[in-house]
Length: 282
Image 1: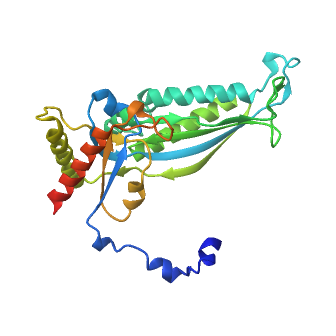
Image 2 (image 1 turned 120 degrees about the horizontal axis):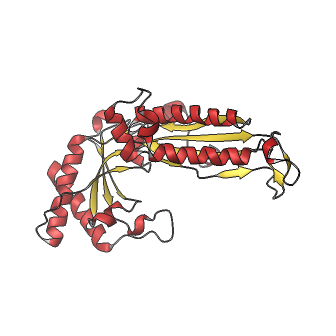
Image 3 (image 1 turned 60 degrees about the vertical axis):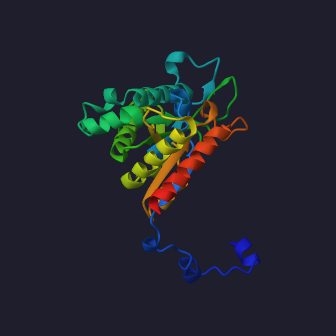
């Protein structure tokens, strides 16, 4: 806000509302992006159509127990939040690898949702911290004495994602009760899944096929259709208009790294696909 004021840019509600797009003025939104994953390289195809972008839930889990000396507290008398956190993280991995084993009996998910989760659900613990973080101290229950870790959970089915969050939380609380530690689960971020428009996706698939065909000659493979586990600009734009996406193959699925790399021929194929897509609309 200070930067805007410093450059004499008027910041009023009216001026900001004046910058909004009129949805009626926009036919659609199309995004081209590297895959950020290894699937296209594995199947040996330069382009893929994106069927949708996974919804996301991020949580912060804080586990508190009883602080003590590593050498003087008997194992049978410990309320160790670090060991509890380790069990919670293994639970998360098990649930996300085998969602059917945890959700089939509850009746909260139908077969379609369970099938979707089995192919799209991914879960990650990206951060973990402990306090006082000393090699000879069991973490404890004081305000700054605990074990904290993050959970990043993504799936293309929002109903299924909510069912996973619900079941995960219940199971986590049970483990903490059994271990006599406290557990606080905070939801820090939620974003619903976005399904790409069928018409745009169909046009993009034809355009990608045409582009690869033009480069290498007659091909018999289907253009892959993938889900995006990463968030994209299309998630925000989907509130304004229909969206579609194309993925471009990248080496090793590496992204957000100096090792990120895409072949020039694949960029060429993507350019031809964009041209074919625009020409089909015009």
